Structure formats: C-alpha cells, structure tokens
Length: 255
Ligand SMILES: C[S@@+](CC[C@H](N)C(=O)[O-])C[C@H]1O[C@@H](n2cnc3c(N)ncnc32)[C@H](O)[C@@H]1O
Image (cartoon, rainbow, N blue to C red; front, side, top):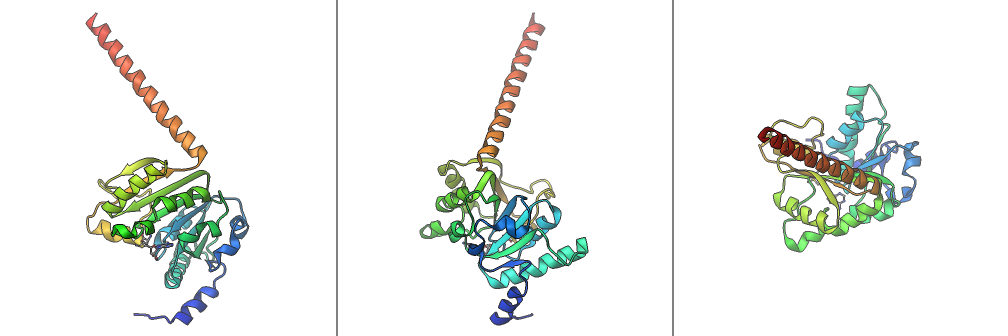
C-alpha cells in the first residue's frame, strides 16, 4: 500500500491550484469568478474520495461542481480520480468545471454568499447514531438553515443514505424546516440500477451487498418550489377530470 506523509499530501494539494481550493473562505461571493462563467454551482458536501462529483463533472460540462471534504488525504485521492477520469474519457489534462474544496459544512456561511449555490448533494453522510450527537448530522435543521441561505431560487438538496435511522431523522428534519420533499425512495435501485443517477463509493459498496438505498430531494428555492406546486396541482386537476369523466361515462352506460 502506498503511504503518503502529511507533508507530501500537503505539497500534492498545493501543487494543484487549478483543481484544489484550500482556503474557501477567501472565495466567498467569488466562486463564479473562479470558474470564469455564470453556470450554476452544485456541491457535494462530504465527497469522500470523490467518485460521484468527478463523474458528474465529466457528464455535465454545463454545470460547475464543487466537492467538499474536511480531510487532505481525501482531497488528494479525489484529485487523482478526477484527473484520471477526464484524461481517459475526454483526453483532457484539465478538469475545467470542478474544484475540490477543503472545508467543513459548519462554516458554510463563511464560504458562500447567500444564493451562490444551486444544488447541494448529501451522499451517505455520517449517521451519528447516538442521539447526543444528533446536531452533527448534516441533515439536522441547523445545517438545513445554512443550506437554505446558500441556495438560490432554483436551489435543491439531494440526499441519499443507507442508514434507515438517518433517513427517518432527516424526513422529520426537512419537514420541521418547512422544506417540500419529492421523489422520496425507500429502495432507490429496487428494480434496476438507476443509471440517470451517479453512484458514490459507499453506494457502490452497499448496493453490491444488496442493501436498500434511501433517497429524497428537497426543493428549496422559490422558483423550484412554485414549479413543483404547479406540477402537483396540474396532476391533481387532471386526476379529478379523469374521475369526473369516468363517472359521467358510467352514468351514460347506465342510461
Ligand atoms: C461516509 S463518507 C461518504 C463519502 C461519499 N459521499 C460517498 O458516498 O462515498 C462521509 C464523508 O463526509 C465527510 N464529512 C463529514 N462531516 C463533514 C462536514 N461537517 N463537512 C464536510 N465534510 C464532512 C467525511 O470526512 C467523509 O468523507
């Protein structure tokens, strides 16, 4: 096994300013400047080794991606994965729409201006099973308030986990924070692997063991909330109209 010293890890990170952000607070309000365009910014908080965020960055060149984690070694592994993927699939030495960020979600307000982000991914966040640690869960209402501030009018949170207890906690938490949820799934890959969604390292492992994956999306921004409500209302009206037609057809048959 390859072992890296802390110093080597630090040097490895510092040598990649085109992919690694070590002082995200300095970029508060200036992330678009860093990417050099106005495309929406999606972040994975707690990216681990970065498989998910690298894959999304290669799949969607029209979105800017950030992968955040607290640990240097994970950032370094993530940078290697991202570069390898872009080299193999795109023939590119650059990773133009992704930065890997050393940061802690606790300090989100210090890194992002209000409305600077458009989507937050929380994938297989640490479950912190003891109730005395509930406040550390990344879906605790105190974190949801931070996310609400950082997200723009199209803002969404996409959350998936293998932990039933964290999912139950999170459903209550999203609801207490008055966030509208949609596309809730208690077994994401029940019938077949969802290839419209990208798998994380943890997900690949748990799905391989046959475990169910729980997932939800929360709509946060005013625009996306309005669109969601209009869609639901249209479905309700269509369903009422279908029922009325069935009733009328039944009456005609009886006449
Ligand atoms: C269980 S791992 C999941 C990694 C990856 N998302 C996946 O699904 O494979 C959780 C990750 O979240 C990171 N993490 C935990 N709390 C965090 C926080 N407050 N801010 C940023 N990252 C955090 C951990 O360092 C760890 O890498």
